[in-house]
Length: 377
Image 1 (tube, helix red, strand yellow):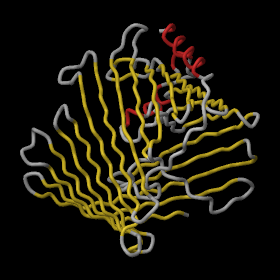
Image 2: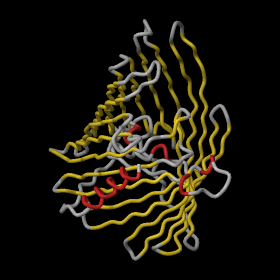
Image 3: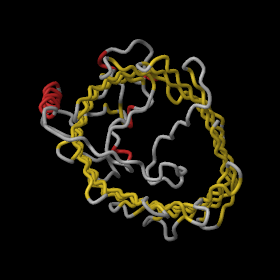
Image 4: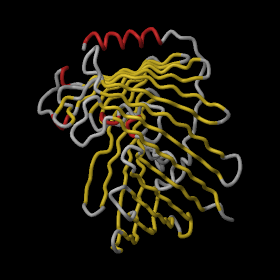
């Protein structure tokens, strides 16, 4: 195992000396759309500070939904829907080099819950080295749809420390994290999950090399998670953002338990009305020793298409989401249509979801219509 990660870190070191140009930056598709319409599911944008006292600012965001739903299998099953969520944000900026950030979420959706979404500090050392530590989420990966593409997805929710070393055409990132919910004392080095990431721009192509080794408390199905390492590439051609990622789980230096590959593209046409966006990803999974009932090979497709700024007032938008598993021949199609500004601070959301599989002679339908209140304060 030590040989494996010595080799990976050596590759990171060699890779960092490649000559490159600056990478292109891409905006999220429909970044001002609601969660039901976004082509990319992204972290909500924290609203601008409404007040500031001595470098401390507090803001908030409230979402309230009330609506009707129906699930149609053999016969319709009608129901109601109420959901409330409130986010309180705190940002402390005593000087340009130091920042403290926190968010508290309160929600009511069949049950009441309250929790700390994130609480961390960041520090800029020598105006160059970025240091951050606390409870927060990290996202590594150029992919946009499949959760497997975010290398740090199963580390989010832990306490982590992150150090980033940028240079003219790339960034080296080192992370150490541990799951405080599973530990009762100060963690040792064996409890910590380690990750390294090197992002470099070569020509007009962004390349990202990564490796991750899990702490001893991190298990899946009672089995310790194997280290993962991989490479991904991204490039824009004729306005289309193309990307691909390959990752392998490596229990030992000369063995692996599975591979995962994702390729896709996205494009946003926003130079005219209406704005149109499309995102397609294909994922292939291979498991060397599948469990009973598990497929060794899996082929999946995910497509999202969105349109906004429709109508005379440019206040309508819609989206279609299709997920299909070629291996099991099942999937689901979701369509949504939203009208903003129909009521003050509120939107009218409508959606239908159709699930299908060989086991179902007739697809399952879910239909919903909702009045959604959204307010920044």
